[in-house]
Image (cartoon, rainbow, N blue to C red; front, top):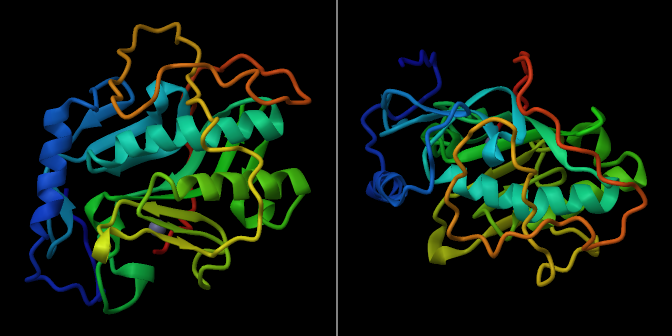
Length: 273
Ligand SMILES: [Zn+2]
């Protein structure tokens, strides 16, 4: 795939940091990611500049196909186990707690060869390596959509759900940016696996919100077994499989999981970082 980047000030002689390729190879060798109808391999992307990845994966759904994407997205291997962990341990427990039903879809963005925040210069974004996910909206099983642009300051339940997910994201990703972090993230969460100096995590903004879910008690949410014969993804990082239902009281009964995916729709990529 060749991306045309006009006037972006990318350093075309820049080389990809060795740890990125190493992380990809390690992830691929670990067999944490299985090729399924939702995760397909693509040809390597090499440039311009340091942009790209060895073995891009084109994804139409996460979590064994149970959380669909509005459009196909491209990631390097390490992001997929992280996103599945985030869905199982942060997104779905929060959705069950606040809405009594799981999330069935995401409006999201991924690979883009560009600098951080679309700046003319400066460092490349983690998106330029397939190492970042932007989330603009969550779609619940009943079809209700919670966008970050509206929900962050929307109904109380939406506000709390988004903050709960945001805080949970900081336990999985190295960088988490959301509304209030800077002028660019008012409408999406940016989640990535950057390697910051000293192994630190960047989680901005610092929220005053007190989470309702205790991380020590959260059991990873597992989707109902799909009717189709998809192969479960091995996830050695997850704790023993337990359904999240019943762990926390919820005013609404859980709804059955829908068929994953759905017709691809075009999306407005709000992601910038
Ligand atoms: Zn981003």
